[in-house]
Length: 204
Image (tube, rainbow, N blue to C red; front, side, top):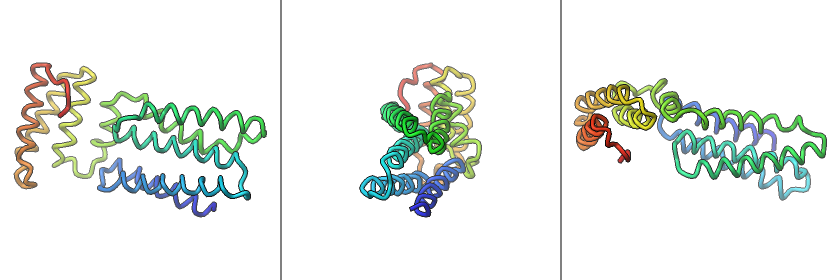
């Protein structure tokens, strides 16, 4: 079981690293890792060989990883997942304290700290770190630049948002036709105008 556990967490970690470099299928790899992790702890919960604390800590850790995925992908329901993760963590801490096995919470605490770090991070900074900074396609990725301008605008960095939108529009004019995505030129142009008029209320 320990070997399978290492493999499952490694798959999630690989997907997480690929996310920062903007490689395709990173979310799918992370979801496969999470599915395997959940499966391992579900099997453990049904197996008398493993005690209840092992499964409780495992499920709490799993939900922190799910919350991290939703936070990094800017998917909805991240707040709800964070609440569930926190409740499971409280249960794990109380149960571990009663059994005097607090040392077994290391992985749970690491995953929660990583998730909370990104969660409390301003959305424009978070988006920059996971979609712009190490993006191996950033020179042609007008979609990421356009989305980055949205988060800058939402955080009231209007001048930087306009500068980023101008950059996105410039790249789109160079590469959109090549990728048969001409409609993105008009979309980004509309976003650019809304930034100037300060009327951008919804990304799409």
